[in-house]
Image 1 (cartoon, rainbow, N blue to C red):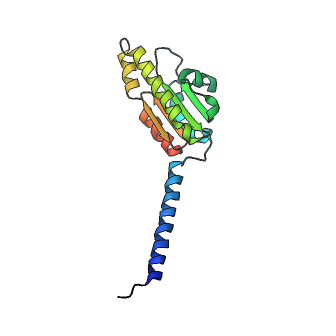
Image 2 (image 1 turned 30 degrees about the vertical axis):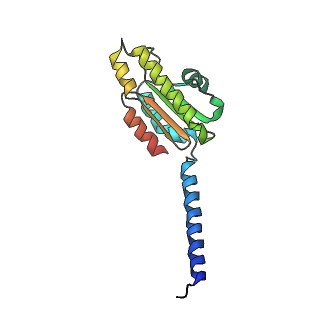
Image 3 (image 1 turned 135 degrees about the vertical axis):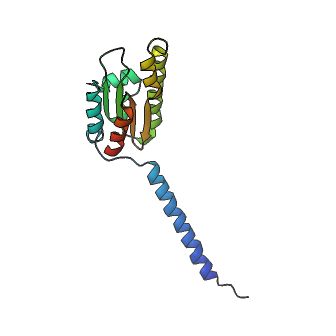
Length: 161
């Protein structure tokens, strides 16, 4: 029985090449993100936020409310309501480094948890909004929204990416 070693070398090289291509594609998908500016990403969600009576706030206001390091963000859009009895908020962050996503996501979760503790016993309607908050990370962006129309705002954000 004669075995052709040349044929096996070609198959082995093809398998190694396929594995390398797979790893490169996997790494690219993990660090995927948008190249759009924060203004482009947030344009439509902001329209919904302003319809919900939310007003634009500064990056400094967002960092204070959420307790994150704003220097790690390429751009931040933050809207909230003037009334202390309304928990409606919209936060969109584009990170400089996608590895910082967890830090921003944890800050948003902590914000919701703190707000729930404040509103749980005396504002059930606001507490319900908080329980239905949306916090999603997509590549190099974070979306957080607490509002009556948060699903509509989130869908417009996804389309903007």
